[in-house]
Length: 238
Image (cartoon, rainbow, N blue to C red; front, side):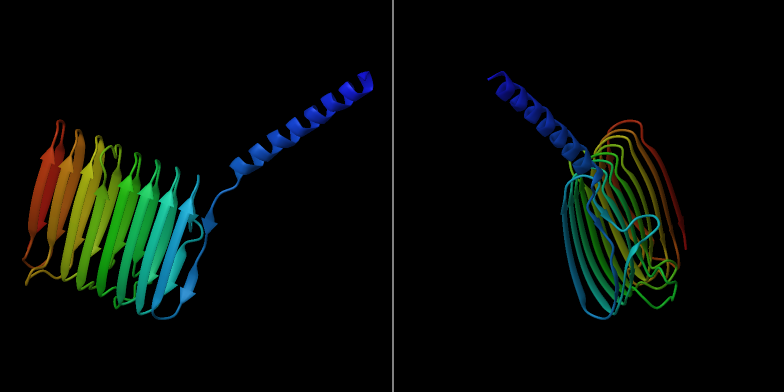
């Protein structure tokens, strides 16, 4: 009987060690996806659920090259990373994030060909705090029809959003409901005939907002803020 009890105790101890090792290994894993695609008419859907989700990273971007790209990324969890480069005449992208400490870097026409990203429709929706969004559309090239929407749902605090949108008709809508937000918006390109447009709606306190729109005419800004402690700088040139 004593031998049997001792054996069971050793077995429980052994199983406990295995359980602890498994837990540590689980937390070390992450959901990593790297994409390199060349070709026309790509539809790419990515769904990630868990911690430390990545679609590309700072050393290895996910990238697609082709005339028409449709991208849909859904990430649920904390510490999400998206590093994505797109080269193509028509791009439609939808990114939905749920979690904290998200880092998004989305670039269209990263090759600098000045001929890509003619028609861009991009939507980024965040639910969470400490989000860092860096969005570059056109990169001084002529993105003729750019419609970009960035939305932070209620309680999205401590957001840093830097958006550079270039194009003949660039419309950027920024709506974030949260506190302690920092926005740097730069819209350049060919104005006139309904060019440069920014619609900004911010609800929350402590907003540091810098907006620059420049080109040939058609500069329009529709700005609504709410809360205390805002620092807003707007520059417009013809």
